[in-house]
Image (cartoon, rainbow, N blue to C red):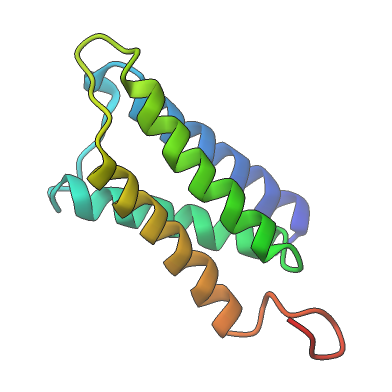
Amino acid sequence: MDQRILRILAWASIVAIFVVTDGPIAFRPSLGLGANAERLLAFTVVGVLFALAYPHRWPMILAFLIGAAALFEVLQLLVLGRHGYFRDFVFKATGAVVGVAGVWALGFCRRPGGGA
């Protein structure tokens, strides 16, 4: 897949997660898996997209996505009717790690010549 398309999808997905995390609760979609599983799944997908879009920058991607997960939870404290919990952050951060690590483990995040 074209890197530009992957980058657009990656950035669109993190923006979408921000909107459903920090927007009105009515914006939050549900797959019926339970909120924690959905948080983990959403950030796993975002981690995969970012790792594929920026394959040689996986440490920076991890830092960015974990930071975004923390920021999204903190910002929820400013939204009436929303809440930010540490456990929610843990599920989001774990999802980001699983997504990036999965892409890395499959060999898509390694530098040419074999370095990580």
